Image (tube, rainbow, N blue to C red; front, side, top):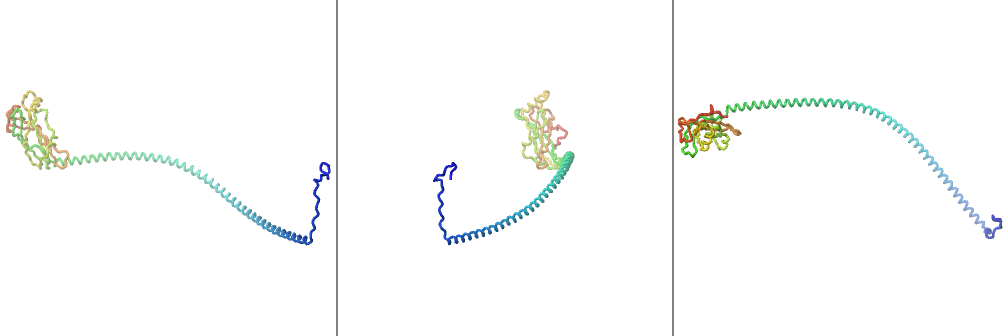
Length: 330
């Protein structure tokens, strides 16, 4: 042998010499053969069983594949039908959508027409409401005017009836009793008997009386509000009379004030007046009582009354009313 270089191989490169096989006993050979044959038979049996199982498994797989194929076909067919139905439904929906769109357009047109009609109706209603309100206002004003006229007429009737039936208090008679001015520094006093009478048809309640002696020509009446200071009062039935002896005073200062306002030609003559008022009511709760005012001129039958006059008896005195009827009341 030679190596790649063409030189003879080295001793170390040579393989070891083959050893002779040990002798084999015939009985050992026979037993090994039998064992080997059994093993081969077992292997063949296993191979056959494996082939059967493989065949069975192949059949099962084939059957499963066939069933799956059939199921897949059925599923595909069902899916196809469903897809066709979905397509049909989609087509129907598309058509319905078109119809809905057309209907929506019609509804929109109807809505526009309705809006126009509603605006017209609203305008008409507004005009009608305005006219009705104006009529209602006119009717209300007319009713209020009628009610006012009716109330005024009724009140006038009540007042007229009341005036016919109410109490009327007036001066029935005046009788001067005496004029005294003895002390030149003291006030002059005039005493008059006043007879008052109820000329009405109802009883007069809370009759109050006030009279004053005045020498100032600028004063022609006294305020009846002074009677509010008088408490109590008398009641007079219809036609009933009441005589009151009333004393009135005139101070020296009042005399002097009267001389300043009167005509100087008269000197210290006194132009004396008796001014008075009567108030009363003729029904319970009457807020404003009835009032009778009376003015009289006081004169002496013999001579003028002056600041120096001491005394004048009643017989020489005269009270003349300053109006035609002192019995007029309100």
